[in-house]
Length: 368
Image 1 (tube, helix red, strand yellow):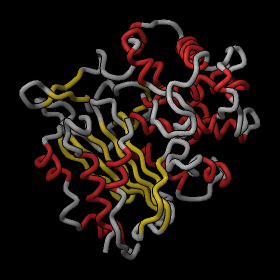
Image 2 (cartoon, helix red, strand yellow):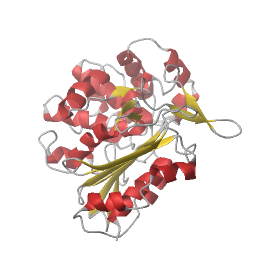
Image 3 (cartoon, helix red, strand yellow):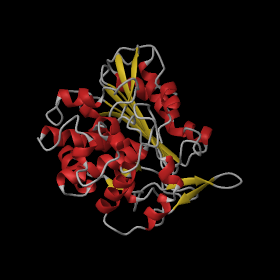
């Protein structure tokens, strides 16, 4: 879930600093100390990095992969990125637009031709789904017990997502169209639309359209398995309980387009760089479209687009992701040419905002 107020707060630091020798400046900052974040918050582990348009400038991490176990986190470890998946799903759609297989402004009627839409959805576009102003709300579906049913559902994910789209779109909007209401189901429907366009599961499409071309090799879906950090939940009475990735350790797979991806921070930085420089992967027009809010909201297509800050030299793109067992935050300052990413293997409340605190430490290098 995206907590807009929390991200607006972390983006509000002001000031500026010269960019020369910034890597040395960051390394020298006594406040960039992941171990101190762990001591303050009690999180099992935290990791973060700063990247420029070409490379990772600096990366730091501290802590253990699993509470009560000795294995330390490593720089190459994958982290669950939660709702930061949404910007990637939007980028996949943009790639399909550039390939001539999809178009911006497409209405839900054209994207879901087999669904008898309630008339209230007739003018709703793909951009309104991606910016959470469509009128979709998570509340009625979740209150109806969809999550436990989806966990037990063994049918193909394309079938599950198409069924959910038909359920939502055959009834009137549960929220007010045009008003911002963050809803994961918006992106489940975007994923289903991508599946209708391509005839393939979203998981295959994002791998072919995004991960492989960008050289992202650590990506997967759900909690990372093997030698990797585990997610953690609060323990009654205090402390954190590690959640075995072999069991129910994430949202159901059908939620994929809204937030089930995991990858290393360095691989996430490969994606972030698309927003730092001109590139052949996504055109300048696509980047502008993805980072421009729809209507009066400040949410664009997978990004909260925050007005400029002095330190950032222009607009900021920020987002966070959590399935309550992990937390990752990302901040991109295109005008400064920098992306900052930080993650923890416990949710934002359970970890007392450890990932956000580390991100703010890195950000401090840019403040005079």
